[in-house]
Amino acid sequence: MVVAEVPKLASAAEYFFKMGVEGKRFRPTVLLLMASALNLDTPKSAAGGIINSLPSELRMRQQCIAEITEMIHVASLLHDDVLDDAETRRGIDSLNSVMGNKLAVLAGNFLLSRAYVAVASLKNEELVGLYAEVVKHLVTGETMQIATTLEQRCSMEYYMRKTCYKTASLISNSCKAIAILTGQTVEVSTRAYEYGHNLGLAFQLIDDVLDFTGTSASLGKGSLTDIRHGIITAPLLFAMEEFPQLRTVVDRGFDSSADVDQALEYLGKSRGIEKTMELATEHAKVAAAAIDSLPKSNHEEVLRARRALVDLTHRVISRTK
Image (cartoon, rainbow, N blue to C red; front, side, top):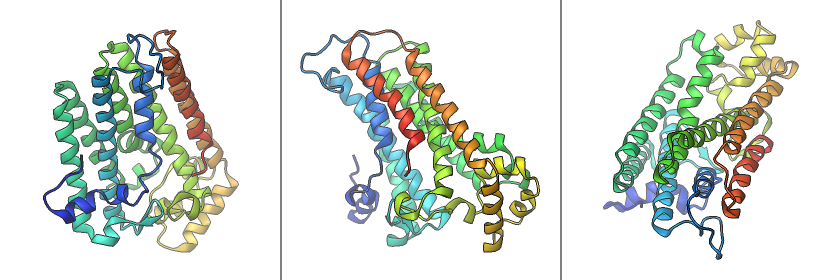
């Protein structure tokens, strides 16, 4: 789908894909499994893989949703790296550090445009509105992150709302898009959305934990990235509930390494990491419950896909990178 008249723009847009570091392919995996999990009316196929049991035309349209989602996700990463002056991404040099900020922004814009061409090709007005909302949420979430007051930076409610926009909206609405393409009821579409929403929140909460507990080698990025950019995430927010004096350190913005060290000391004495893990686990359980509440099916491929989706909720919580 990434085709451009200007070779340099095409190279920039395909940078992560060509380098063989597309990431965990987490979102496409979720969406293709969701497609099979909602395959309620298709007779069981003797040939039998999870994806192969779907009608070919419908399967292609659902694969298109997975591609659209990944293009939007990568576009958001390219833009984030420019905003954050990031030097690495996924264990390699970031695109902006290799080709410059201007080309990185243009490559992100180009991926978004290609994603929307793909959405339009599905000829479904509801999906057009859905993905317009997703992009609005991504922009809103990023703006919330870079334009916060001191009170907002220290608010768990504000943090969770920002996380819904920046991380959960894309996967939740894409799960819903899969249900819409499959012709499911509003109730089933809502369950698909709830799964993606809560899985996305759990994923981000664990990311926030790993920013403190992981290493640059395992994460493919420098650890303590958020705090060094003055971004306050769930572990520190929970730590502040136990140690209100941490607020004074947070308000200074972590411009000095001494403040970073002091914040980490408070975090180590608190249950901040543990409480963030508990919150992530709660969201993972809600995601699993959404799958369990889908209409009953006797098709083995459907049941296998649902088991895999539930298993993903456990993997998200236990991951170390």
